[in-house]
Amino acid sequence: MPSNHDLIEAARSYMGCKWMHQGRNRVGIDCAGLIVCATADAGSPIADMQGYRRSPDPEKFLGHIRDNTLPETEPLPGTMAIFRGSSQPCHIGIFTEYQGVLGFIHSNASVGQVMEEPFLHEWPRLLIEIRRFKGFDY
Image 1: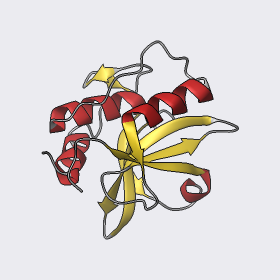
Image 2: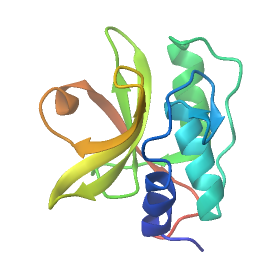
Image 3: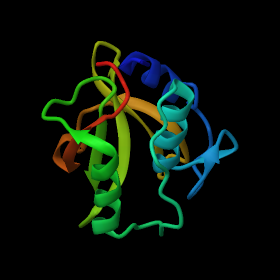
Image 4: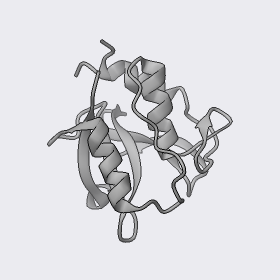
């Protein structure tokens, strides 16, 4: 069974890849694509959600994630962070240990690429749920 560290390293291998809505490869990838590709690369793929708008339907978005992950109470390295945008869930990433603090890796549309950063500033306020990936050893 792959570990949460395998998942984090797989996600980190996409660092610097260009952000692209519904992207699923190193040419272009969005936040959901990063989850899909990293879990597959690490050896325990999550079901993909395709055909979504840039601002996804919150019921479908959360329903798909909840159907394919397990609830978690702590933001542990390798767990999924679900963030809200202005009014609905619309962004996801993977928690990491980053420069000695809790961080996360995500495909950031504002920056235009996959990046890792500390879980600070506005991010804790925007966090709405933490999920654990099935098929990984934590």
